[in-house]
Image (cartoon, rainbow, N blue to C red; front, side, top):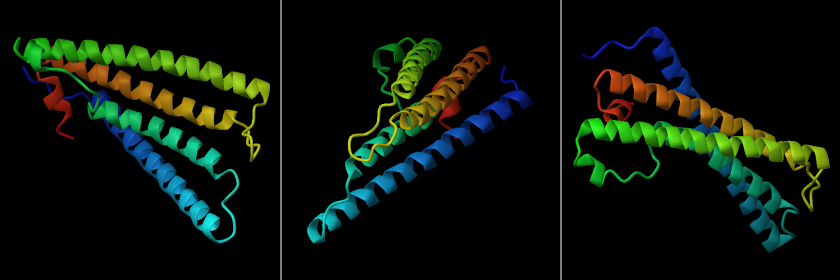
Length: 179
């Protein structure tokens, strides 16, 4: 009962993969810049003096990198799963537990995103800045919120793909792991 994918699903899938892969590139860029700043600060510390506030920027970049990698991890089903017990009940049980797990992840990411946005608005309101460089803290939080919203988009795609695969009687993990 394998139905061909609809054009709408294929567009949704392509947009999701493009988004996730682009965010991986952004996360990698953040980590490279963090490494370069750290190296420059170390070299500066051995010669003249370390870069002031380098740690503030590095911690923001590393946090953004983690948020940027989450959508790709969700898309590739890189989260921890314990399938040993469920696999004994067959592929139908595996599919349903996968869907339930993906819904739970989406709900949790939704809660984290909601609270993160609330925190971002709080940081914007109170004008908090980093201690040394006096950068406004809200901008890093705002970028993180955008990355979490992108992760929600990926979570919705995964749930949609799960439902489609259950309906078409396909194994969920195998169908998405082929990309």
